[in-house]
Length: 337
Image (tube, one colour):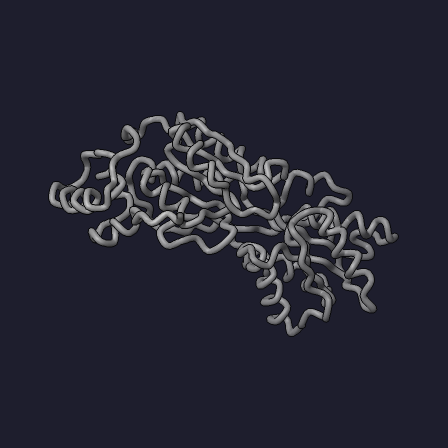
């Protein structure tokens, strides 16, 4: 049976206060005005809410549950590094959970039970989302959530941290245009993922601003992996008029493109210029070193952890969305046409 209980967001709306204020009342925090406390408590009582855990003192240690879709990916390790670095400085603990399966976008039903049993104080979701039932249960438990690089549009009031993906797509494409390339292809990620759409939209915007339109077949769809970059690059090379440059919307796809080009006798950058997106460690050590857009994954993870700590302490955030800059990193995989 679907989870029907009202969420803390519903309580907050009814009381005319913020979600952190409701959480403070639910968890017995003293820093709430008496009249506000009574109003919120009355609503909580009518909805059957009770505190499920001992309130964690403001500034005290806490436990974060970090949920990742793919623990084996290079970007996952950068996220983990950023969370663990912040947690260590803040005296907090981290539990890493995996959403098993590349095509699954959220934790399974057992996860909430495990989360409660571990007495976690906050959740960081990476490229994932929650069902209405899961969000409702976390609200009831008073466990705040921050999303890193959301897989979809976050629900209202759910904070998230991302990168300036659209601007990064523009910068990658403008770099290739400035080198004299006009036949520029793009290999995007899954069409349903906002960061992927934004990067491809940035490519389109830069092409349109320069008075160019992508040729038929030049906009390809991968899944952020090297095999998909390999596959889509081969498809581009099979066109009657292949591109002279490729913007791969993930470094792993760019490295897959390298392999396809090498097998077919193309040299990078002499025969094909390549730009990636992420600036993974592998980008520096590829041959030639990959020009790419830097996605500040470690900094994004640290920022999300800081935001989560604020919510865990019962405080309010200045805003629900933060985006960090994505600069161009020039290396040796591009050259003038």
